[in-house]
Image (cartoon, rainbow, N blue to C red; front, side, top):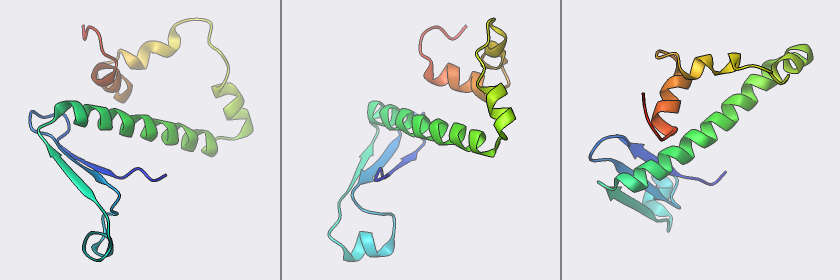
Length: 110
């Protein structure tokens, strides 16, 4: 994974995006021939990179959950559900799933 970016207040009116080839280290930013771009106030750039971050985070978080499960738990977790019982967390106002749906789902927010 070579993605390097830093988001500061990505949901504010004045987000800061820092991205480039440089690692966030003394050697990289002082001694090496690396590049770093600082973008301030561009909400579109911040939105795009925040969505990229959340996609990567959710991917690896779900892999971590599956890796910690026994074979029996994984089989149960992977079964298809014939009703809408799995959707509850996405509409429970206090859940992480609901917050992410409201933030990244687009459309009407109720």
